[in-house]
Amino acid sequence: MTTGPVSYDIVVIGGGASGLMFSASLDMRGRRGAVLEKTGRTGTKLLMSGGGRCNITHGGMIRDFVSAYGESGPALRKCLYRHSNQELAGWLEDHGITLADEKGALVDSSFIEDAGRVFPASMKASDVLNVLLDQAALNRWEIRRESDVYDLVPPSPDCTSWKVLTSHGVILADNVVIASGGITFPETGSDGSMLEIVRRLGAEVTEPRSALAPVYVEDYPYGELSGISLPDVTAVVYRQNRGRSGKSKPVRMTGDLLFTHRGFSGPVILNVSGYTEPGGLLRIQYRREFSELPRRMQKILEKRSAGPSGDVRTKALAAMLENDDFTVISADGNGMATAGGISLGGIDTSTMQIRNLPGLYAVGEVIDACGITGGYNLQMCWSTARTASDALSG
Ligand SMILES: Cc1cc2nc3c(=O)[nH]c(=O)nc-3n(C[C@H](O)[C@H](O)[C@H](O)COP(=O)(O)OP(=O)(O)OC[C@H]3O[C@@H](n4cnc5c(N)ncnc54)[C@H](O)[C@@H]3O)c2cc1C
Image: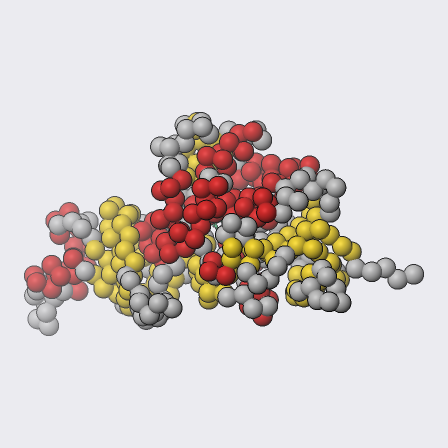
């Protein structure tokens, strides 16, 4: 006897934070749903987040979140407002997760305005993962590990369902939610393989690149300052490749700069890293007097601004202090997030459905939305996953 392909109402591709937030939000009693995860594990990046402590969201009014996602922010506004940081905090509390700020002070979900970075009070990402897995199980989701999706075939007159081609055979699904993450740390399973598939289906994909990463530059002079951090530094990224509008505004952010052996790091660099491109210009503005810099750095700057006879050229030194310019080699390939992905212009953000591909949805890091550090990326996973779960609530 031959059996046909197994059928589901909804299939989720990816058992990371966003795929699990989606399934933890959607009760499938009376329907059939499966999460297909290519590796043998779930939530691998979630477990790495915040150094294992999981900076799950950020305090503040949700309207202030929009700018944290750069050019993608306005398109995300609807999702963020509908499913906010306050809602996420309340949901976690209802599921037994007490929250705390970075210093461990307890945070009340109904008033998280001034909390800054928000964590589970246990400081254990595994507690968050366990709640998501428990709730997904209560919602009757099957989690199928080691199920690698290698292609998708849209519905046709012959077959009115999506065909999901997996390492274990064909699965039919009325709706498919892509939650396959970005491209960094590919050993976690997030290798960008689904982006090629959706591109072939006609969805617009912005080239993915590593973000929230240290940046390497040509002739980096500060290796010996490794470990030294300077607060309140501005980093400006000038982009060569122009956007579709033909214009490319420099991206400017201010925050802590960290020198490493190989390149620049620290929050200000992580936050601009997704905008850098090889050959582009990274400008560092130290925003302080020469005398306020660490002595070792003063010596390096003096050496770099010295003339052929070794004398310090004060004008060159002042100019360097104001605008220390470097040519970008690249951002480190293993950033904490991915910039680029399925373009938001091609997604209806009131449902997260990919336009022109009915029944196909995208949530989390696979979409072209990347937040700054501070819990904004997991919040984006939550807001987009919940928006899709509203749309598919049946
Ligand atoms: C070191 C580190 C620290 C971080 N810290 C924070 C933090 O503190 N706060 C914060 O907000 N964000 C943080 N982030 C970012 C955050 O963890 C991610 O944005 C988030 O986990 C993305 O979730 P996701 O479900 O969209 O993707 P992922 O977590 O990447 O999950 C995608 C899943 O899809 C699976 N998959 C991929 N392709 C297929 C396929 N073809 N078939 C089947 N399955 C597939 C993958 O195996 C993977 O399990 C951090 C990231 C890193 C790497």
